[in-house]
Length: 593
Image (tube, rainbow, N blue to C red; front, side):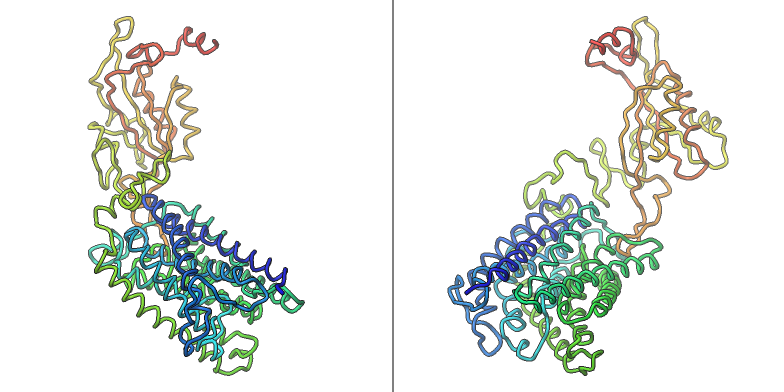
């Protein structure tokens, strides 16, 4: 007879672990560029779809079927056998299915932005059908590691390290993204397009991890089991918070500022690290595992990226491979029953080391063969042109995953009117005239303007026959100065303007910053852009007023560009020239009406 409590608890855990797919999708999307967002989402969707089918068809039987020499389970196509537990067989199947999908989805982020979608589908099938079920049988299905006493309660090795090692191999064989390393081999930062999405993904994963670890009891019956669930929850959270804090402190010390992306990865490292021993270590052991996992993560990601020259956009190997292996090994140190620090000697530690090494060897051999075969047949990597255009358009025919938003991914040159500009102000290059600079520390602002003033060439006739120049003044400055600038311009009669938020940098190339420990030489800084077309108000007065409002004498005050305007047409009335810019009594009556 099945247990209602056990069944409901495992179903809750199943739903939570499934929700991790959304978490991985958000982390990977946020930590990569906008032009690849749709491709990332599609991969995270399809690895669950294909993984679920193949695990039902053959994977589950290979993992949990009667053991053949402790190496592989007896295949049970479409799960026809009777698996005697306190919960229905299909409930157990679904719980294990979502775990299998997690192992496959880890690989997506490390090979993002340059791997063929078709290739991804193929190696996802291999992971879900062969790689994960066989090593899973060794650990959870009664195989040779389980017989030795190997401990991996919820999958630091069985799930996460399998995915992490595969991620490293895949990232190595597919090669680095274009622009990741310069001609001297120095790593260059390619920041993701949305830390907000990345953080959302981390919070989702953290939330779902309580089901990942907690429901691995596969039972919620009896006081002892209920107490164990409480211990698992506490240890899971303590490891995660400790790892987050340690990652923040290390990056703050190393880079001068706390790195957001690496700190978020630190949270995941703590969760991965504690997964193997969450049920058999004390809270103090959980804190230690979290701290060690975070430290290894930061230095591991730096080594992989800078020394090994392997481009892993989301740090999948650091989070899942390194932390998964370490967390499993540390069970032999911190386990309250048999751990080195609790008088158990080195026996358990030795078994843990053997298990980790064996799984690493198994995954390495099978996935190297898999990736090589894929590369020789359908190809592993997209073309250079497809990568530059973005996986969304080249692989899925999707112009943008952000339909109504304009995004300029880091590293892409700005494009204006079909022209590309590198290392210069696009507006200055297009204007074809002199600019007015306001970032001087030893010059009177008014005199500076007169040296750079522009004589307008274009003129327009007003209704009365007067010839009045139409000029456009384009001001780019810091967001914090906008309110004062607007008020000062209003006082001289400038009430119409177009304001946009933009990003860019001038001759000073922004400021030095760090992303995941890699220096960003030219940072895109947030700016405000005001566009004003003037006729009756003298251009010189507009510029002088703007300079006085913005001037601090420091680099970065902003720039003012002046353009000739050939004509202005007012849509509602058809008025042209200066008349189109006037707001008279007739206009006021129209507004009232």
